[in-house]
Image 1 (cartoon, rainbow, N blue to C red):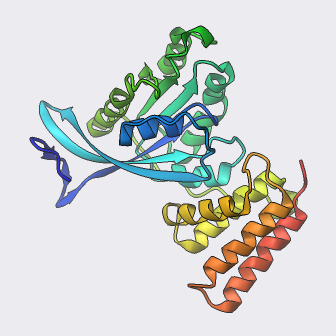
Image 2: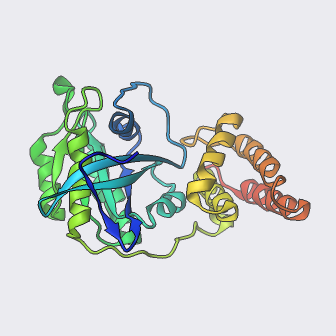
Length: 286
């Protein structure tokens, strides 16, 4: 639905959409921030985002003195470190990023610099970024200061903001700030090729799970259409992506085969299933 009193930002004859990603460790509140932004609701249940979840929101921002309507496609990326292949697949094509840390866990700030930022920039180069210190409402549990977030933000040349998914404080400001940066074209974006997982015979169970998601998405038409299907199969099989098991992954493969049987030949669906079973059988427990 169009927003009143706003000029649609256009490139040629098409309304421009912007792909934004939310990244950071698990349980920092990415999904809650997104829910607050899109639905204006808060849910304090923690549910691991499996792979990638995509939401859509239309907002109005200022650009050169004009009101601009733009659509954000926000990708909530799996926060478990080590799932590099499926995470990198989600990064591709992103035009802006919100990097989230949790004020109550110092390691979530440290991992932004050590893991998430290098991984992101290794795929898309430099894109506009905003660093969000979430759970600012939990003042008595804070483990680091705004100054420490600012130190990292200054090194990146990016703004930072303190947010609360619980109260909604500065959540919309965070997205609008990033949207304005993207419109202004402050940074140059570049895509890179999808980076594959290690050799199949060398993979741990976590790397195998990562590969399994990527393989299905490749054969299903991409991350955006493949991940909702994957999410259902993992939930149906009761597999926790933080601690996958061979038994659970083999069950996921059976469910994947049932899905593929509906749109692929019997031979191709069977070949895919058998290959995935072989990769899982070779995985190490580490």
